[in-house]
Length: 284
Image 1: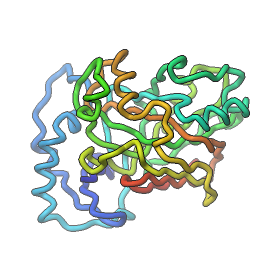
Image 2: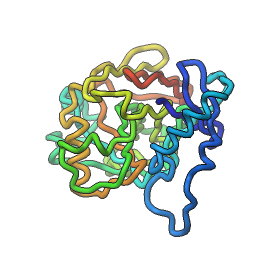
Image 3: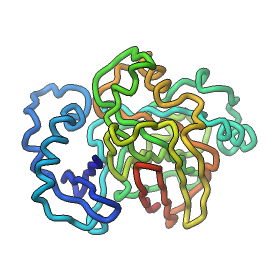
């Protein structure tokens, strides 16, 4: 099932690359919550119930052209967005060759660097676009597979990791280059793009073998496969949950392949991820 959030908190079931059905009435079945709200995304925490209701509503819904809506982030309230640095070998190699990427920081291995956090306030959907900050500096695109966590867990073994996945999406981990810590440089508003929708975990049997591609203004820059991840999806969940308790809706950006590069206002980024979909993101 492909579930999108659009036009400021409407919910849609995506039929294909051109159409959706509005199933926003499914939100009426969400349990009431009281303050203080539990950590995590309320919709994702109740995803199984939501999917059952969505399926019923979709049978009587009228298709809406996707071209007529603005796609927001399919996850509204993650407790955290986690990024995996230097997690493709060819990206490690290009970082060693281009100091503009790393600003003299020694390159080693993800096990030395650990994960980094992006501010939740950076999260947007592909239809919201990216508003560049600090344009005197280099601002790069970094496309990746995004994993959305489905239930609470800590110290998750690799053998059980897939049980904690709600779904997948395309992630754009936008970054301003410089000497500041990654969490600061990568957390500007709009610098965490998630979209175009959430694909439920049952639709992707093997997340570690997906083709991905990014182009800027029609020119291909990134093209790879998630089979080339240094730490694959299950390892990232195990590694990350050693430090953090994971909650429903938490997002793991699994890392970017080689081909990262700068963008400027007016550029258009197109991303495609096998078995997930495609999205277009405008830069301003």
